[in-house]
Length: 582
View 1 (tube, rainbow, N blue to C red):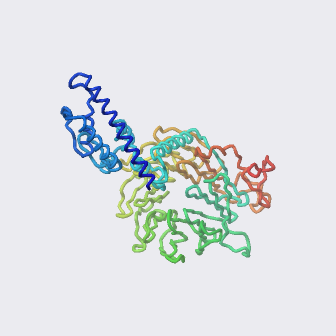
View 2 (cartoon, one colour):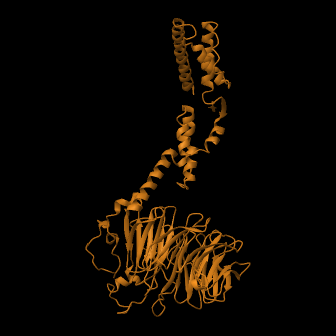
View 3 (cartoon, rainbow, N blue to C red):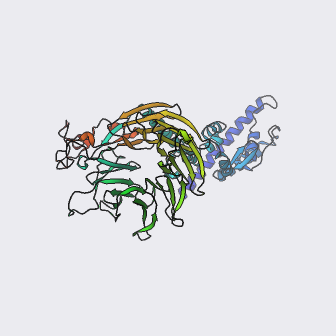
């Protein structure tokens, strides 16, 4: 502390001497110049003193006369001492002729965008410091959806972080448009024929006719696919039943089998099921909450909802009796107290709540429901009309789940609406697929179609959109990527079987071609020759458009195998040793 005080005192003394010498030089130059035009230092000193005192000097008043040189030296010493004492206490920002505290000025700047902050940074040095404050640019990053799980202290420069995020977004959009990225085929030959596929944030689950359920984590290119143990024990006689449905979220994986068994796995614990229950009949629909741990199944005329209690023990939270067979079943997201399900059974749509178990949301005799999707507050479903003879075309109805009122009637199509996506669409937007081979995007505020795309030759089977692109899958096995605003096709990919599942985010795309025929004709599906019927098995594609992972795009999928399986598909293997083990 003593050494620091001595150094500070030495710095003060040298600064006073330099300032005094500069003042004498300025006075000498002012004396040599014309009256009133010399560069008198007293005006600068008076201005500095007034700024330090918090006063606002008159802009056009002449500088005060200097009484004597000795007073100037004393004034210089007083100004310098006050400047050193208050160096870290000055927190006022000049706004024209008003001095505002720094916090208040920062509050005003929070209402500006990137362009306005850039213009303000060119006004003065003080405004530049204020316009580049980390709090402002951190808020801009959060408002644009970048780095939402990062605190303000994790990045040294948030202005640069926002610039990098926008550059990556532009690069991703360019890769999407040009189909630049890595493509992988997620295959499991021992599973026989593919039955159902689902995904959540890049983690893919697939069920097969062999009764096995497999997981892939596509967020890492060298992933391995663990097998979830089935609900049936190894001592059970006979072959395992086929998998009917699979669902996955961030914490759970669920599979429903042909014999009515439902198995639930935890992604955090292991491969053994944490819960299983049995229906007496074949399961017709399966639903899993987007968040949390709630499972709903429909079998026969019964809908059952299962969830764990506070201690982790699973129990039946609701059982609903329905008069018709359920075709579609969804759990309403963002409902935490008691689960709410929406079920479509032929021409009736039910809203299943614990306090009102049999509430009918929509019912028109002879107009069956052809597709269903649910968001937090609304439900959208396609309805097959009576035809043009009775002036009842096929439409998509939008209902409010809180008031049970019909909000909109969309579309006027001759073909049946085969798929609808409301939950993953942008706000006030809806995208649908139809048997008339068209993809339609609707604006819910105007009840009109923004665009109609002639997409597929055999009808649309899956569709999803975001703010600028649309991805559609058809019965012809074609996956198409569209530019929504231009209404043009960017690129397409083809496989043998119908596209039953499509999911994408900003940097990846998951598609699944699932066969309709689970038991191909011509040979027994129980044959040991696994090279047979490969064209009948179905396939899952994983596309990665992230710029951070383009370095591995040349690595073939066969090079990612560990070759630890006793028997497997070995057709067209051109490499003896995978590159990832060299």
